[in-house]
Image (cartoon, rainbow, N blue to C red; front, side, top):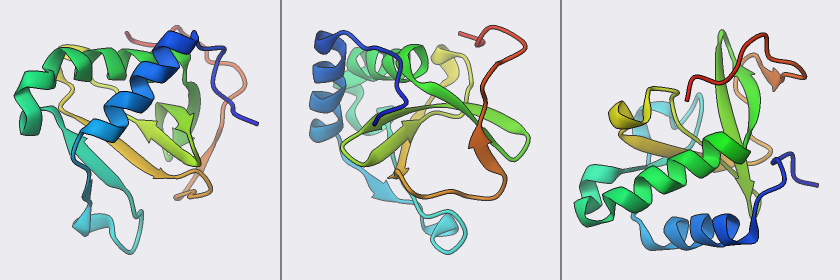
Length: 119
């Protein structure tokens, strides 16, 4: 069962479509410690507006988990989780993804956040 917040079908369908259309690259520097892939909006500049929408969906309908001392919002799609690094949207450059069962370091769910998400 997904931990995502209830997501309008249109938004979920859009994110799935975006995920399928962009290029994903394996993060070599984390291949042994935190294997994952990423996509960078600059690789497909014509899709920038779609990138922003995808980031917004992940953050709005995702769920918070701690990764060491940082909190990221994750969104689950077909056995994978997607997240950004938490920068303001205008400074966000990439979306990461990893297998849903991948847990790195002190990564655990957060039931209650002491503040509103910064976006």
